[in-house]
Amino acid sequence: MTHSVDAAAVTAWLREFARLVAENKGLLTELDSAIGDADHGTNMDRGMTAVLAALDGEAGKSPAALLKRTGMTLVSTVGGASGPLYGTAFLRMAAAAGDADGLDAGSFAKVLRAGLDGVVARGKAEVGDKTMVDALTPAVDALDAALAGGQPLGEALPAAVRAAEQGREATIPLVARKGRASYLGERSAGHQDPGATSVTMLVAAAAKALGA
Amino acid sequence: MNKLINDPSTVVSDALRGIAAVHPDLHVDHENRVVRRADAPVRGKVGLVSGGGSGHEPLHAGFVGPGMLDAACAGEIFTSPVPDQMVAATKAVDGGAGVLHIVKNYTGDVMNFEMAAELAEAETGVSVVSVVTDDDVAVQDSLYTAGRRGVGVTVLVEKIAGAAAEEGRPLAEVADVARKVNGNGRSMGLALTSCTVPAAGKPTFDLPDGQMEVGIGIHGEPGRRRVPTAPAAEIAEMLVQPILADLDFTGGDGVIAFVNGMGATPLIELYVMYQEIAALLSKAGVSIARSLVGPYITSLDMAGCSVTLVRADDEILRLWDAPVQTPALRWGR
Image (tube, rainbow over all chains, first blue to last red; front, side, top):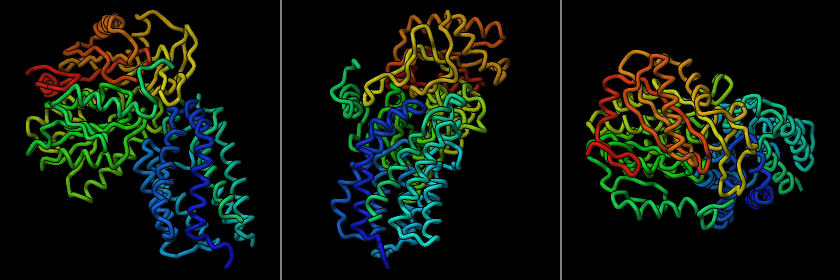
């Protein structure tokens, strides 16, 4: 078995996601101020800062335990729509990870898809609604396809990042149908969705931390 | 950004310390950011919990007290509170008759209250019923949006359902009263300026001089369209006509007319607006039974106003008139 995603790898993934969110806090908030309420960057940064603090006490736990702690911390600290959506994603990932000490590439892809299913269930959004689903869905699909084609995780994850980026760019012309942006109607077109942007960072963080 | 703050990240907790200092009849749980009646839980009375992002003051903490809310949860600025806060509030006000959650229809609020109701019921067995307010007629095609936003009617739902709970009525009936007020309420808002969220440090949207946003919500989200500024009489038309087009307000026992300031509009302008709105309603055959004018559900330092009409029956008027004693609404005792 190659590329076992163990507790250390999951921790590295979460740390890299937190770093990307912190670095792009201003960008996320700026995107959100165009079509939402100008708080996505500050909210996600507050949540991931809390996650980092929580992870300090969880060293050596299973991937599932780390993902669960992350989900609960996000639900408890982020608020808005992002808290329940990201929180549910991580809680579903934890459930899908089971009690294994490490996940192979196929299991990790299943874990990520469980997260996507959680977001869809909680937010009742589909592709084309101009939400985080627009980037996460193609990313998970691309990961599955690349692994099915025999690529190792180290090549499959960059493919997932490219798909997420394309999905993120594709939100620009869309008219939002979910969340606060939907109240703008046609005026939401021409703006990149902040949720699709932050979830692309989640996938990019996975590629950097898990793909080696 | 010129604001009376220490630091953008401490605005909400600093304000809660202020509320605690001003109002000894309220109890502030700073850890959970919950403001509740000091005498809660009231035995045998349905508990009313609401909450939402901060920045809409006096909503919601200003409406905590006898005759209205039992507790309010304060989120970050314009950000829904988290389920932990709502669970703490629910437990703190459950007097054995169950708890009503009053939730404004915004995606984040709905999802967090949904998780909170599940958690509170699972943890303590307390009965929770949620009523979602959705009165904003600016949201036209709700098939393709998250549905109408909950705005001004929330204040009236909290007052009227609060009075029903004070009468000792059971949870299902208090929830029915809340739904009745929401179902008979419609709102429309307009912004003359953007607000500035402290953490962002600059206005949320850029509104050139001589322009205004029609059909705004309460979070500085831009409205449905941008038009040149106009005299108050024309603005009143822009706000009242979509409301009257959406629901028949003639007949019955008249309406409760609520003209709300968005935070930076002085009362003199709200009075100017009120008399224009009253004239329009009179011309349309709508009689005003009660009225409320002032900044009650605001959007930080946004200038502008919103109009809410609630078609009233005898029960709604009686409950509206019932005594209330909160920081921001106070009459009858």
